[in-house]
Image 1 (cartoon, rainbow, N blue to C red):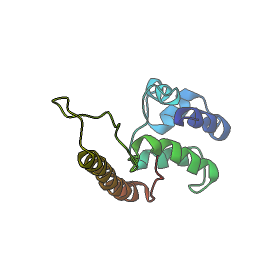
Image 2 (tube, helix red, strand yellow; image 1 turned 180 degrees about the vertical axis):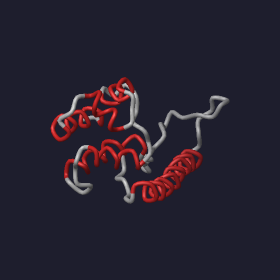
Image 3 (cartoon, rainbow, N blue to C red; image 1 turned 135 degrees about the horizontal axis):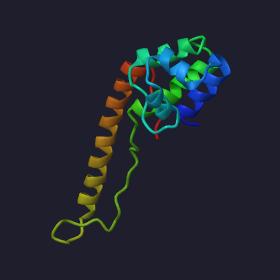
Amino acid sequence: MFFGKKLKELRLKHAQEGLRRFSDTAGLCPSEYSKIERGLIPPPSCKVWIYGMIEILNLEQDSKEALELYELWAEPFVMQKMRTDVVCSPLTHKTDGTPLTEDEFVGLNEHINSIGRKHNKNADKYNEEHFGKKRKDI
């Protein structure tokens, strides 16, 4: 399920308001809010906004529905992790067309995977700072 669909489901279930009234309460113009619900534009990336939406929906911040909405909202902003078990094609060659030696092939694979490991450390740090948790490998 994507964020907008869940938001609409919760609006109808908990706020029991039409789109126009709810969007006014949320401080958004109805057309902008409608585009968020339909997934045409992303929601604002500010945590204050999503916490405000949870409050407007009359949900407890740690309820199952609030946490699910938060997870769906946060997903596009989370720094995804990279695989660190990449193996280049054995057909990889140099720019002049000559094949890589075995040592060059091993070195290239190690270099690519070391970039992934460094990225994953940065992703963990970013996600901890912004979302309070680490994300699993993709």
